Length: 365
Ligand SMILES: Cc1cc2nc3c(=O)[nH]c(=O)nc-3n(C[C@H](O)[C@H](O)[C@H](O)COP(=O)(O)OP(=O)(O)OC[C@H]3O[C@@H](n4cnc5c(N)ncnc54)[C@H](O)[C@@H]3O)c2cc1C
Image (cartoon, rainbow, N blue to C red; front, side):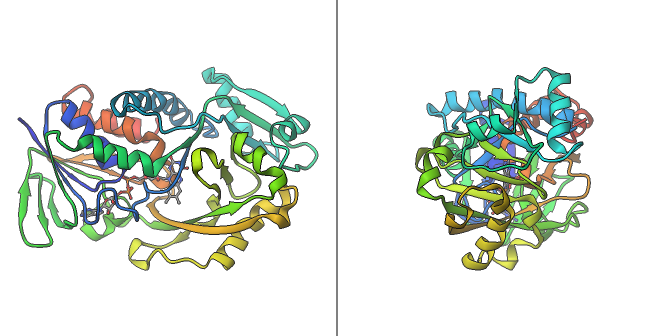
């Protein structure tokens, strides 16, 4: 039985582990905290999956494949941890990301509806948009229940050919020999090693470790009563105004969550996970206020802090060095692709895809 060592039990490490045990591997999954780790980027009530990727055709296509991988996961888990609310991107200016997404949808044949401003406000009566605004609605898309997914993935692995090591920090890796050294001085040698350490990659002193990491804070909000149902039954919203504002609906007992791409700051997990609800909540809400009816009646209730690695290319990096595969540069984008990446990494290990092709695919070409 081939032995795969996996560092990191976020959605990537767990998905690689699942794909590996399904291929008949013995797996050692090493996680510095609990499994799942509430501080990992993969742990939150929800993460969005949506087709809208601007002009990036490779990633738009990848979303379709990702839905297939999610369906295979739901079949394994016996439960679907996703709400297909649809995903609506708003355009406020010519040549913005939504305009580019529309061109990509038309080219790739992604099913969609274009809504004028009144049409958007019918679907989302909680919004008030300027003249000329329009929306691009993809019928498929919505919140993936991230925390419940990584918990269910970890549970699914119990009793399989896997040794899950919690509270075990890897302090050194040797990519040529697929071996790791743990904080307690012990070492583990595999036939192959996968590193999926998220924003902690910098601690491992690899040549890819200098990629910047960012702190991203999202705000859970309580909407005014008049619009609670509109949020509950409406689509996910992406690209609402400058800076990439987005909202995830409060379905299945989760909260309504607002995020802004532009709210990220350089930072690393060792900076901590604390937040200032009043200050940060007000800053995040301010990005949404111009587009919300009864904007003054939204109340921030909790800030969720996470960290991810992201360079200027914004392209995922899956690279093989010796007997090691490194998955990094996951940005605020990888959750939706986790199970698909797990399958592709194993496909490469099993010789179904060349590692150079896997790298190109991951980079969205
Ligand atoms: C605020 C925020 C919002 C996001 N929104 C979305 C979204 O809407 N849609 C989407 O698709 N994606 C989104 N993302 C991105 C997505 O969540 C991440 O890209 C994805 O979860 C990364 O998964 P991962 O497994 O690579 O890393 P993580 O989930 O961070 O997991 C890495 C794990 O490795 C462990 N680890 C690290 N170093 C070591 C070590 N030395 N030894 C042992 N264990 C180690 C860590 O403890 C951690 O558990 C968002 C991310 C954030 C932070």
